[in-house]
Image (tube, rainbow, N blue to C red; front, top):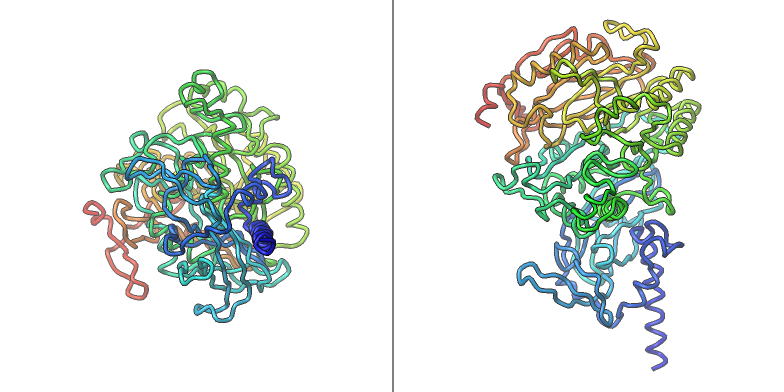
Length: 626
């Protein structure tokens, strides 16, 4: 009996130690269990004598990796008895009740931890293993696994795989890549940049195309990874078999887990996670539309909204969304006692300092909530307004100063929303000059940023943006404060590349014609002097190919997203030479395939197939039948 007790004690101690390595349980901190999940309590209630049968467990959503460092990377998978998550927190003698949607009943299942092995190797056969270990997961974290693979070499490709302990039940094979050391000379880096993937509006074909081409090293996602709406509110998923679950506006932890899980059934998204390490950040819809520090457009801690939404407060909803996001995304918890902090930076050799901002959730001043637009017009220039809050804002400025001091060639800033001033009056035919939900609604914050860059002569700045469901390419200019020549680019301090959505609709309507979209683009481009290219029509993504002498942005448009396919059209290419702080002239080589190019032309694509890599290039005439 004493020997059996000792065995159980050793088992529990081992489980505790290994669970501490599963960094889901370190959100916000394993040292402050009152702030998150108490590992001690989770381990204590589990029965080590009733382990899971490996045959009942599945890798329901593939594998993923993210937040690469020179010597480590985060690995992710989900291994559980069901694709659904545990809807009940009821525990009875070490058991929980899992909701069976087929029988519409709760059934008792063992809450014993799922034991998972992982291995990281330099070869696809996983014979030369460089790191391995054991971690545990359970329904407490939706059966997700996140572990930090350590002891890796910089700028090196690795392969990784999970297995249920003591079995042949293995996950798909994943591929990942570390970043170079901060002081390494690197000649070229490729990244694919995405935003705004809306499940009921179409397939996520854009995620799969760089996988098919094997064209980049890393993926940057600028947010709106999911949308919180019910299908009927925003989308037509039933017509293409893509109804997001649960089919309602989401609020609870179960809801957010289920919604992310639904999105992660898209095969192109699964492939991208499996092939490339991701560096993601959230926008607003990971929580709710037009979120800010104290609420959102739909939920504002008023009595009416509190009752309408079933008693879910702003803070409860945000914490549910954030918890599910950290469980499901291959991302590090940056600061253990600050579970809303997602802003962070990466030094990628001497070539790049990548700065990922949170201009939505962390500490943003009130935004346009649709009913307060007139009020926003009164306060948008107020000096106290901040997109980021003082703590993040000061960190951002110090990061830029440090980057310039260390001599990184490029500073790439991942911002969810468009940084450049965009006058929308003519295109919208209304007295609506600025988007108060973008940097335009926070003029003092943008001025402080530009003042830092100009005052300290910090150049080679590349701002990235998503959110708008459209493509925008601009010289980075302090309009009204610094002189600027649109024809030469003189006076610019960098460039902004903003990308279209993976599948979210054009802001002028999902069914807009190509001619109408290009007409609106021409109006927008002509009324904004720093804006050199604008496209509304295409859903898609862009790639950055970054070298010491030049950075190239390649924009790709998708002919259709209502069917799964690998088609894409290269619609525009732009270059920035190091030290010039402006778009290379002629901008876009003087020719683009869609949208409106300042001082340039637009040509239509011929319907051909690139036999080298099999990509389709579809003529504009053919779009009607797609």
